[in-house]
Image 1 (tube, rainbow, N blue to C red):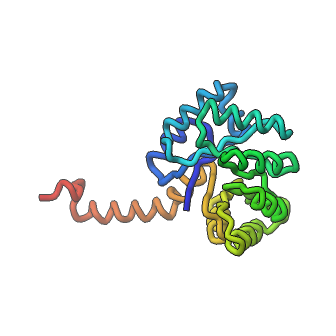
Image 2 (cartoon, rainbow, N blue to C red):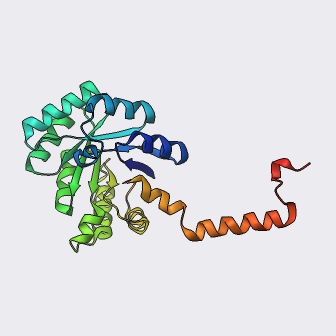
Image 3 (tube, helix red, strand yellow):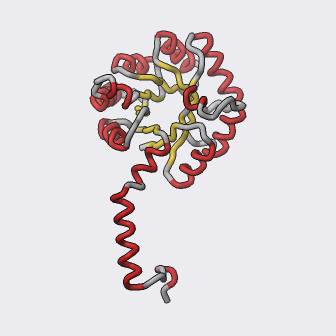
Length: 226
C-alpha cells in the first residue's frame, strides 16, 4: 500500500511525513487555492524538498484543452522536476494528453475518474495511476467500492501496470473500503489519517494502560527502572 497526503500545505506535509509512512503528495488547483496566491513553482519545489526525490509527487494541470495541458505539463516538468506525475482529468482532451505525455515517457495520473468507462480508457492510454473519486461517486449513488474492484479486475486480467490511486474521501471507513476493493494507493486529506489514529476508543485504551502502569510504578517509566 501507498499512502499519500492530498494537500499543498507545507507544515502538514512535514508533520505527517515525520509521523506516518507517507509515500508522497498529491495536489490539484482546488488544493492549491487553499494556500492563496503562492509562488507556484517555488512552492512545489519546497514540497519536493520535504518529501525527497524518491517520493511520489502528483501535480495537476490547470488547463482543460490539449494544447494548454501539454504546456502546463512541460512547465511543471521543467520548473519542478521531471519525476513529477502529471495529473490529467479523464476527458476527451485529457485522454489525448495522456497518450501524448506517455509517448514522451512522462509519468501520468488520470484523475477525476467517476466511471469504469473513464478508467478503462485511461488504462489503455497508458496512465501510470488512475484516481477514482470515492466520496464523490458515493454521493452520486454510485457503488464506489464496486467501481474500484472492477478496475482492479481489468488491471489484473490484462496485466496493465497502472495503479489505482483512490481519492476523495470523507472518512476512514471509505478508505478501508477502497483498499479492500483493490486500490494500491490512497490519497487523503491528512486530518482523515489522523482521525484513524486518534479516536476515543484508541485514546481510552492508551489511558487505561497508563493508569495501570502508574498504579504499580508511579511516575517511573520503563527506561527509569533499575
